[in-house]
Length: 146
Ligand SMILES: [Zn+2]
Image (cartoon, rainbow, N blue to C red; front, top):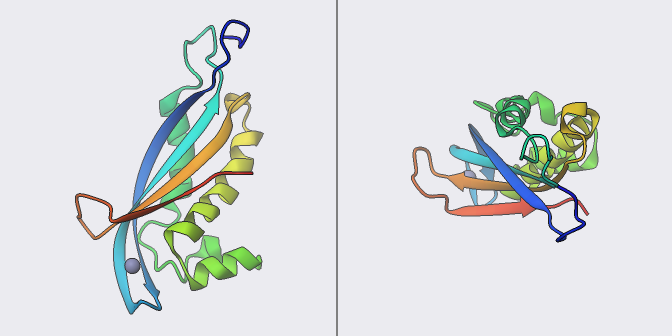
C-alpha cells in the first residue's frame, strides 16, 4: 500500500537461536550461552500479498547465517576469520554487541542482493543472551544501520 493516504512503515521480525561458547575478561573460563538473534526488516505492505514479505521465506533465508555460529567456540568460528578489524575485535570479544555487528554485516548485503526481498530494508538486529536452557535473557544489544 502506498504512503499516499497515511505515511507508515511496517516492521516484521523473525528470530533464530544458536548455542555457542566464549570467554571474556570478566568471566575468563570458556563457557556456553544460548543466543537469540532477532532480525527486523521494514518497508511498505505489498498490495497483492498484504505483507511486507513472506515471513517464513525471510526466516529460512536468514537461518543459515545463524547456524554458522551454532556449536562454535566463538573465538575460533571460521566465519569470523577474516582480516577485517571488526572481525578481529569480535573474535577477541564475542559479545552481544559485536555479534549484532557481525550479523548486520553478514545479512544486509545478502538481503539487498536477493530480488525476493526487493523494497525491504534491514532496520534492526537484536541479540539476547541466555544461560544454557535459561528461560529469560539477562542481557541484549541492538544494532541499526546508520
Ligand atoms: Zn558469557
